[in-house]
Image 1 (cartoon, one colour):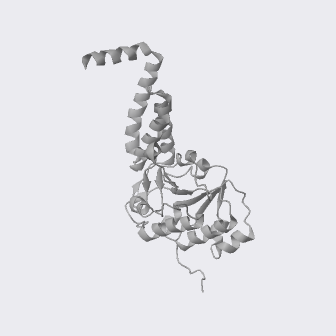
Image 2 (cartoon, rainbow, N blue to C red):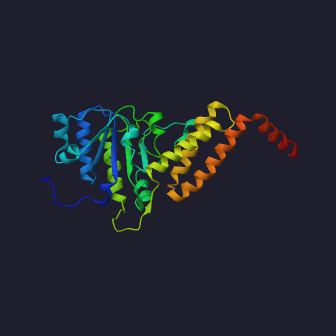
Image 3 (tube, rainbow, N blue to C red):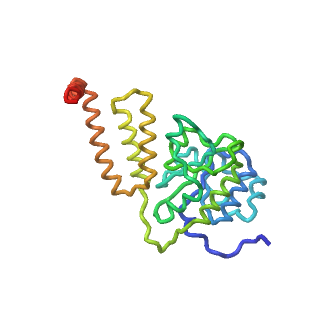
Length: 267
């Protein structure tokens, strides 16, 4: 009873990774490995922790020892998700006011529905127990997901959160090796896009404190649409041309002031 059966893993196990950032408790790590195996996930990545598993980790994992044996270890999130076309951050935080504009949350069942018929690696990132992912770490993520909970105590146990995300993916998954899937934005091109958007936010004429908001909003809105490589190439042409224009005007402010003055008169 409770033994492993000789059943091939689901197709998504090849391309969806679970990333744990600075996990604190050995029992949770073992329980995460077990939950992953329950729902056909095999790619565990761990950030900020040594690569030696304690007896508690092993015991809690039960028959998911292969998940632990094949786990990969990284010093930071960026390196852990460097091969991913889409990075999904998890959070139980419920901000209000101005901060909410940067938090476009999906719910767990939305993820496979939006991503099943696509091609490319996907990482789902979980923060440490208690605090979760920092705001700076959430900014690295392309999509954000939250599990609906009672607002009086919204932060879930790490292994429980992983279980629910994995279950929702398994339950709603339509991945198939034979499907005609649309290819997601490549990880390399996504990094080029992020850099050009950041360059735009730095060169656009505005008040300094607004720059980070412009940067985050553009990245989140564009990447939430799951653009393809050819779409991003066209968009990059527009952004790069705009960057050159703003950088030119910053070096020649008198020309910019003349254009603004002329437009004001026309209005």
